[in-house]
Length: 158
Ligand SMILES: [Zn+2]
Image (cartoon, rainbow, N blue to C red; front, side):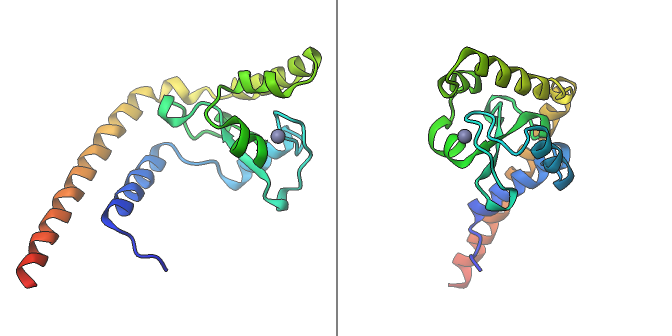
């Protein structure tokens, strides 16, 4: 079992506090997503077996750009599209690259947009998310102080 350094613990604190307000998709929601996208990569159409682990949940709007953890901010993507090719590229730009015909592009785009439009919480929670960021900042500052205090104690005993 790996030991957590203070900076690893700090990241965990940040993520676990954030997830209270903005929870990650539940197993049931992930099943709904797989069904909606018919077990296929939204970008290249690859059919996937759920237990094969090549199916990834792709964050459509990254958290760095204000995206939330809602299931409706995720799409089903194969490991190759999500991990190797798309990276931080805009989803529509990437979909354009992956679709051989304009008809295919239009169909895939419509299906994705219909899904994303269910994400009605995105704006409602903006104020609360701002408040949450402040709470997390306070918790992390306190944690830093504790780490400093422990380190000065360590200096005394060695
Ligand atoms: Zn793919």
